[in-house]
Image (cartoon, rainbow, N blue to C red; front, side, top):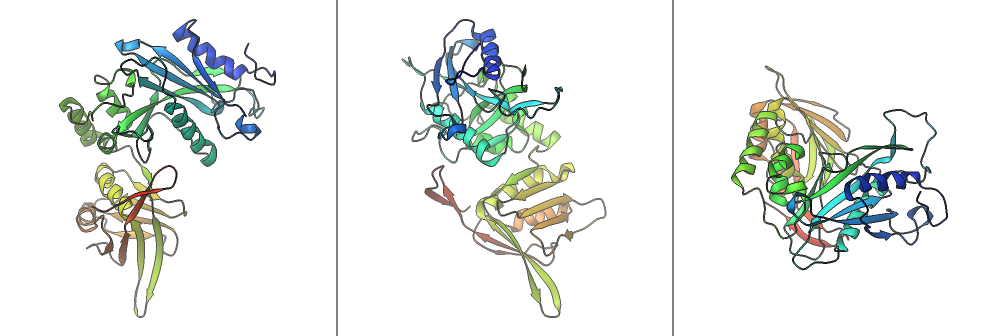
Length: 367
């Protein structure tokens, strides 16, 4: 049984080791541990990351596995009675498969920071990951490189299934590097379906930072297009860079609702909306200011309506014609817009500023 530096038994850690032993036998992984644990004031949220060398699927790669998003030591155990629904810690650990490049004998260390940053996001926001989620890295996943992979999708690790630890269930979620146009296409449908379509070109969803976009592959493009047309988009909500709602009172006339958005917000709204409403699915955008804007598909014979005036949570119910007017009339360019059929609503659009993970300005977005 493993022991921590303080000598405490770590049954959660043991459970992860046992799952990996079933795949890798007696292989000794490279292991990078935190010098000072996060719970003791250290900078890195993960207690450790193990890296195995794998030749599975005929493609040599490094298999990174995290320790720390689940409950390793029983410290987060809330003493609830055992149940099938109880999860260990956040309920998952992250894995990452990175292709071995020519002549490479040691696993790249940039991936350690990459995984620590993803874990830091979970610890700091409380937002958890699940299979089917996606996320943008706001730049190359390998910082400072010229890789086209700037986005991520998450799937259940194809070799590590969900396990039961002494502290609850634990799922292994694999991070998959994606290009911007791949993710753009995926958002029309869903991550699971799209990654299944890509698997013939990306066995075990191994991330290769040197690869081109797979969206140009005819079979991948066709599968995503057909899936989106049949199912619509699974993206029910999006966090946007800027959203604010206010009311403008006018003498002897109806009050106007002013919706302030960034150009990136407009881009994302216009991309996802036509893959939601025609399939009878609502769509919501929200920001860290607490503002939320929900679009509901109108029922047959129903026209535009608005609920929530005077608040930062607004619901717009629109029909097909009004959605098309919105898609045509609202632009991802700074300016003020009105949309026929969506009465008493003004759309104020400001240029979005793009920053990297360090908060440094890297550009602006206008279509």
